[in-house]
Length: 57
Image (cartoon, rainbow, N blue to C red; front, side, top):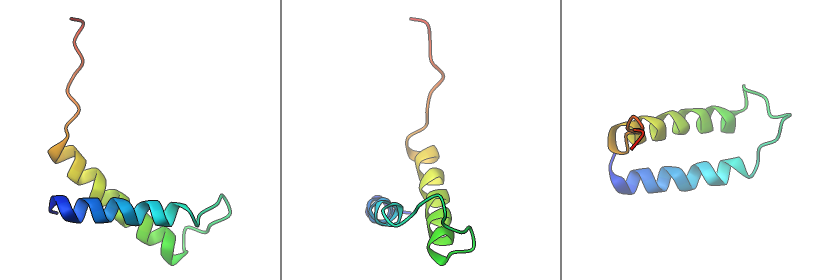
């Protein structure tokens, strides 16, 4: 995934989050799309923005 693809994917996630509620079924096409895109973004962020172990300094 490129930086541009990452940005576009994050924008799409924001769009999808606006149409969801607690009653949204996990079988809903948009839920499946959101779940898939969220996994892609998480993988990208782990690779490009790793969280380092905190220090006490």
